[in-house]
Amino acid sequence: MAEAPDGEEMTPFQAVSHFFNRAADLIQLPGSTREVLGRSYRELTVQVVVLKDNGDHEVLTGYRIQHNGARGPYKGGIRFHPEVDADEVRSLAALMTWKTAVVDVPFGGAKGGIQVDPRTLSLTELERMTRVYTNLISQFLGSHRDIPAPDVNTNAQVMAWIMDEYGKRHGYTPEIVTGKPIALGGSYGRDAATGRGTVIVMNEAVEHMGLDPTTCRVAIQGFGNVGSWAARVAHEKGYRVIAVSDSEGGVLNEAGLDIPKLVAHHTETGFVGGFPTAQAITNAELLALPVDVLLPAAMGRAIHCGNVETLQCRMVVEGANNPVTPGADKILNQRGVVVVPDILANAGGVIVSYFEWTQNIQQFRWDEVDVNQRLTRKLVEAYDRVATFARLQNVSLREAAFAIAVQRVAETAHLRGYI
Ligand code: NAD
Image (cartoon, rainbow, N blue to C red):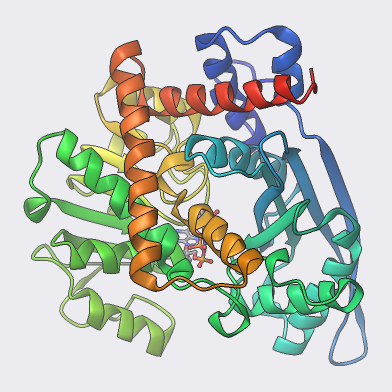
C-alpha cells in the first residue's frame, strides 16, 4: 500500500493506509495478506445524469467502493458532497472494514458517494439523483451483499428512496439499507446512535483517566447528525458542553451551553450562530479551547500539522471519520493527548445499523431501551478490549484498535481461502 513520502500531506486513503500498515507491522501480517487487505476489492465509478426541474441535465460522478467482505456483507454510508472523490471514498470504505471488525459486527466495509453540493438541488432533483444512482449501483447491492446507510448530507428520506428504487426490481427489501425512517422498518435509536456512541466511548475513556464527567468541559465541532446527538447525550449525562460549531462558525458559553434550547434554535434557524446567552467563536478558536474533551464531528482532516499545536485539550474523541491527520496524530501522542480513534468512537451508527438489519430480517422490532442497552454493551466491550491491548502492548488506542481489527479480518480472509 502506497504512503506519501515523509513530511508530505497524505491523501485520505494514504492516511488510512498509514494506520493499517502500522497495525500490520505490529501483528506481523504476512506480505500477501497485507496486499489483499490493503486494497479495495471492487471500485465502481458511475455517471449520474440528473434531470433538473427546468429541463436541463446535470452530469455528476458517483462511486461505490467495496473494500473487504471477508466478515460479512459490505456495509457503509453514502455521502453527497462537493469534495467526494475516489480517494476519499476508498479511504472511508477501508475505515468501514476496520470499524465493523473492531466492534465485532458481521459486516465488511464499503462506502459510496456523489460529488455534488446537494444545497444546489431541489427536493425533486435530489430524489431523481438518488434514484438514478441507486439503479447504477444496484447490481452490486443486496441485503446479503452490500447494504448502504446515511453519511454526510444523506438522511432517512434518502434511504427510503434507495429502498423504494431497489424494491422496484427486487421486491420489498427493507434490509437493503439501514438508517431508514421508523415507518419503513428503521430502528429506534438509529438516528442518535453515532452521537450516542461517541459519548459512551468518551465516558469509558474519561473514567479510565480518572476524571469526573460532571466537571469535564467538552467542545464539539459540527452540529449535524453526529455532533448534535453527541451534544444532547453528553449534556444529559452531566458533561459541560461549553462550545459547538457548524460550517458557519461556533458558539461558546464557559458555564455550559443549554443544549436543548440550542437544538431548538438550530432547528429553527439552521445554524448554531446567533444563539442567545453564548458568544460567537470561529471554528479555529473552538479547536484551541482549553477543554478536557475535543470532539470533532464534521469533516475529515480538521486537525492537521498546521493547527495541532493550538490544541489545548486532554483528549480527542473522533466523531468524524479521519478528522486527525497522521502527522497531527503523532504530535498528539507525543504530547500525551489521548486520541480515541474514529473506528471505535463513531462505530455506534454501524452497530445500530446491524441491529436494524437484524430486526428487518426477523420482521421484528426492538424497543429503544433494548437498542441502547445493546449498543452500550457492544461499545464498552470493544473499548475495554482496545484499551487492554493498548496497555499491554504500550501502543496508542488507534494502533490497538487497528491491530485488533486487522487481525480479525485477516483470520476470516484466511478461513475463507481468500489468501
Ligand atoms: P451532517 O451532514 O449531518 O453534519 C455535518 C456537520 O458538520 C454540519 O453541522 C456542518 O455544518 C458541519 N461542518 C461542515 N463543514 C464544517 C467545517 N469546515 N467546520 C465546522 N463544521 C463543519 O454529517 P454527519 O452525519 O453528522 O457526519 C459527520 C462526520 O461523522 C463525517 O465525518 C461522517 O463521515 C462521520 N460519521 C457519520 C456517521 C452517521 O451515522 N451519520 C457515522 C459514522 C461517522
